[in-house]
Length: 212
Image (tube, rainbow, N blue to C red):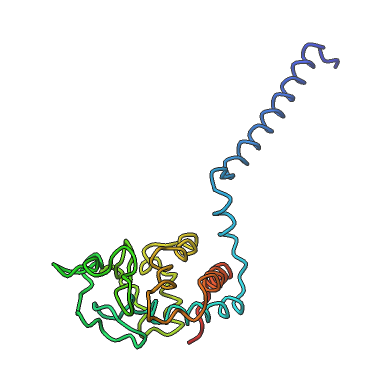
């Protein structure tokens, strides 16, 4: 049976419409799975090149830096900060307080000014001098390399910091103060640049914790 030309034309248009509609639906579906709002930096950080050997090796530098007096003294196990290269209890006996800035009239800022006080062994300074707050003490003192590594990446213990925020924390004002501690104090065992490089390497290669 011969098909009427108009009928054939209508069938052709229907098929063409269906094809166009299918292509549109496929394109729309693909766009639904594409997140164009993700900043390139975040995508880069999420694509971690895991390497347990390199990560653990980098943490050796991180650990010896964080356990040095310039870092550990402000991360004590108790509520009293530590002093000196031998990390003894602060002689004035200040307490952490809820916000980490002291209690009652004995506030950290009473002695620790915005900059280092001139003179040998005088109080070092920073505009935001404080211990970690009571609700999240982030203790370094007495921690093994394994324990400290696990704690550093635990959002419940590190101030809800993801990898991006942890990397940024290497340039925090109080972190940098460790390399400008005032006269008469030993500097950390490596430069800040060396520490930051090891810190980023450790995080980006998987943030593996040493076995011990």
